Image (cartoon, rainbow over all chains, first blue to last red; front, side, top):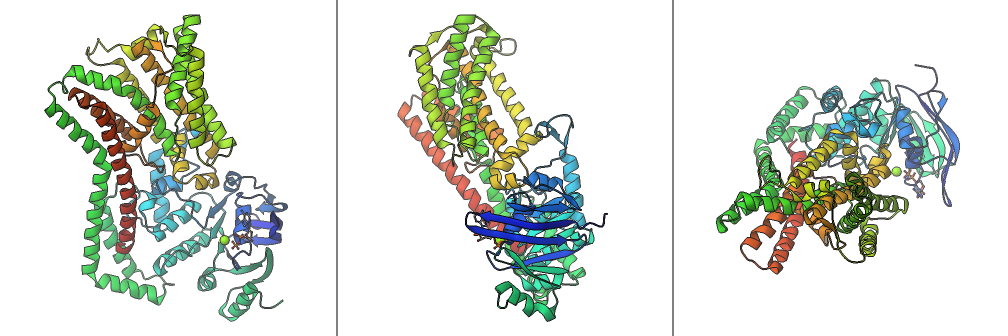
Length: 251
Length: 379
Ligand SMILES: Nc1ncnc2c1ncn2[C@@H]1O[C@H](COP(=O)(O)OP(=O)(O)O)[C@@H](O)[C@H]1O
Ligand SMILES: [Mg+2]
């Protein structure tokens, strides 16, 4: 592993018509840390993530993965660079089973000389690999062969997180991973995030749940109106300072 | 299909795991809720029972179309002595071949949440182009290629305009090509059937497999071949998996790097290509290419997919659904003909079956979400 940070965003700027959604944003995430991105609704958090994941293109600024600049021109480029995203809506396929979801967009298939789409899927290998991955992340599903649409909110979230961890991912980004979950299910997802961290991933988490941020994040950056307005180590004693950064009480 | 046994296991295993290894960060409330759950086995068992009942109901709903087809066959066989003869079975197979082939193409489109209204007209245009090519060249292979190419070309227009024209839904473009292709077929043929088809075409569409059984039409083998190839493609090949992914979550597919546009275009090309295959069967049977071929065939194809049990909402369904639906339509038509029931009643019956099928798809969706809720409570 090099000394360069897992992910560095420098001078990121993104406009939607008249709205300046990102204004010269700088964010750095290291291997083995959980970075929380905080901010009120409309602060630009999802836009930042979409730019890092290749869903949107930056108008200005650059994104470096382990010190190398990568032009995030499409989601496929971002995934190839080791960036995995758990979107707010999860982007799961309700009609497919857990394994198909874990491997969506990069199915294991042969032979290599054929175009990717025309290859023969190695279904038993994928089943084995997904069972192994779910076991390692201590995710238990009622039935791996039933469609994801039949699963509970927590199980679906777990599948989405497992997908992001399913490969040689170096950077995992989660947009509001616990927003739709109950207590027990949130607990499972938080544990999953900590497991990703212990595997050496750089984890970026967007969350409104201050308790969760306090518990799992090593560092928190606060965004407001498209700018990064502060950074703190989340500890109980600076909780009120974080909150006032988010709502913009001072400055 | 939900594995009830496995879920049962999971529930108990899950409970044991969580009591044995209370997670270090677990919040007090979460643990209290868990403790309550474990102490209340009555409630949990009742939930499990309802879960099982729902699961059984869902299985029944999924098997519905096959069961209905079976019941239909038994009823017809009892009402008409002719129905179960090999001779008549051959008729049903021959009459169903075109619907089945079109329905398999339509299935691919419906899997991506689309619809292809143009297949009946594509069939006519393919047949007319084929007859014209045969008239001027006499070449069998060339004729077949022209027919397949014509169908695929109409499909390509559908797919390309849908994707690059940024249309919200394929209804309008395939409605347009329904009109255009039929118009072209009428224009090219001068409104008259063009007689004569090469031997390959009439063998495929018109002859029976005398080497095996005189009543068995050759087109049945073509249907079986198309069904097998499409099934392999959908279940074993990466592209097939992507078709399901695009139907299940179009925007999710894009964000996961699946080539959504190419997948969409491809299903319309396949549907058009299969309209060309269906044109070969029709032209072979009648030894001509006519601009009136395939009139309203698109509706049969769509109906077959839906009553066969594929979801009209996309993402769910397989070739078996298209085949079962096609045979249901074939058996209803054939049986009612044998029983001398008037044609208007056939139309009404098929319409009613469509309503029932769509309603059971909606019902299945509702039951599945109830199932999900119950399962979340039980796990
Ligand atoms: N696709 C888009 N088109 C136009 N405006 C957008 C789009 N996405 C986000 N925005 C705007 O950019 C700003 C930041 O939004 P977003 O990144 O979603 O904030 P957050 O996730 O922090 O709530 C908002 O004003 C929002 O309306
Ligand atoms: Mg957001």
